[in-house]
Length: 178
Ligand code: ADP
Image 1 (cartoon, rainbow, N blue to C red):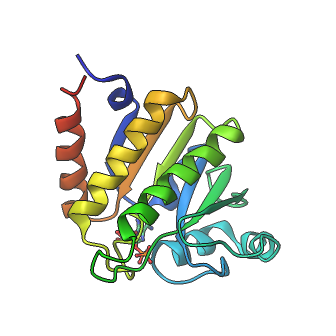
Image 2: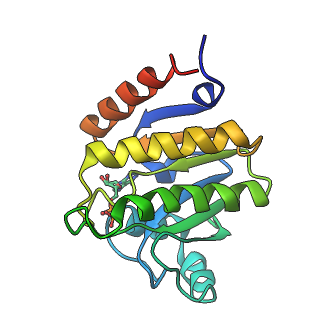
Image 3: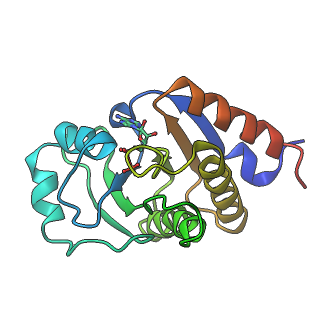
């Protein structure tokens, strides 16, 4: 018997810009004006209209999130969140990373969004170690889904094989949870 939150958590390996979901989450920087990694890929795929809307959003604090339209993406919306830069783990990184997932899900729920796809926030250029980042992502999303009807489904999109295996193991572990 699967835990309620678990059935609504999925993992896939691939490019988040190709997903047809209600919203994809962008691991942005606080300017919201684009960058490298997944941020660059999302802006390239969405087109210049995304940057134009982002200019009106007034930036975003670390641990917070802002929502925009998806423009040329198959996803209808982009939720931009700013993950913490890893500074060794004693600078509130875990709380800030959990806040990224929670705030993104709150915005999704408020917008009536059913399906949300997350990249592995902060684990690229921002240097957050993949194992604890995965545990925070899965725990935060599972507990949110346990308390809210929306979003109905969360998909973790892993670019690399290692992240994919990590998330798969973490999701299987949670299936036995009460
Ligand atoms: P951060 O600055 O938050 O660390 P990065 O974009 O550098 O953000 O990396 C975050 C994660 O996104 C990394 O795991 C990276 O492999 C992954 N990533 C990069 N491009 C894509 C993509 N097109 N789709 C999904 N994940 C991606």
